[in-house]
Length: 239
Image 1: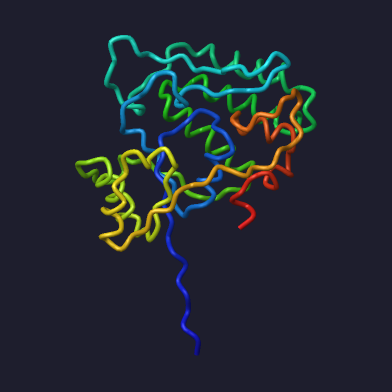
Image 2: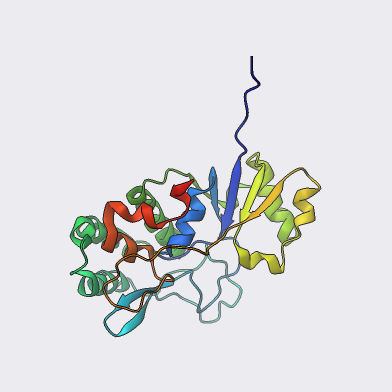
């Protein structure tokens, strides 16, 4: 009888983002558990509360207004939304710029419902989680989304990440390439856990409404333009 090969358990840990780009969802789809690392400090002018869409006049930011005055060290999880009117404004902006996309109408009704639900949520993290969950459903991604505060968090940047992975019985930690500047791989390697780096190169282009082509926009751009074919333009579905 041949020995049964056990599939290695893969984990990724990232800060939540607002309607992030396709690479973020590829990372979710590449692992067995995805942990939202919102226990760390909120950073301004980052992806936590904003993302880019395509318009006839170039790229445009959709930004969720958050309370930051005097809250210099607040965590992402503790960050509150300042004005609920953002949700209606974002929905109308998406409708205005993507109404002519081939598949916008496939998502319009549910998208409007999601924004209506998001308008009543004060927590930025929970708004991000809402959109991440629904978009994963649209893409056919079933990876569970967990919160970092579900785990006992160790001291030290790398040690904290390793501890979460260990709690999830991970064999492989998949990290974004930006973490190469601070992640100590030896902490993982010395404990029989491997680090793999997400590769965001080599994405194929799809038909966007307004040239030139731009990869670094919200995943909604891909969904509105390609609909059920969106998986073909992502890397994790090819494995």
